[in-house]
Image (cartoon, rainbow, N blue to C red):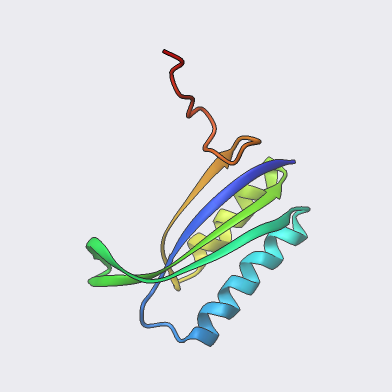
Length: 107
């Protein structure tokens, strides 16, 4: 299994119950596809650099998990279907937790 990180941007108009229900559904998909959630960080409401769907604020949540690569396609498909999520980004992490392929120069 590989380590992945997904950053989700939720609509600011969602109630906390709706947002938690959507997150629970996403976590269930990870578990159903054979993955395990390791970290969930709720960053809260933040200002956006530019309007997204005519909104200038959004609720950020970061999920870090172990999953087989085939699980990511199903996970992202369900995120795209959801109208609660404005944007998302999934990154494969290496074993140290840094994004893969992001090596520092040894000068």
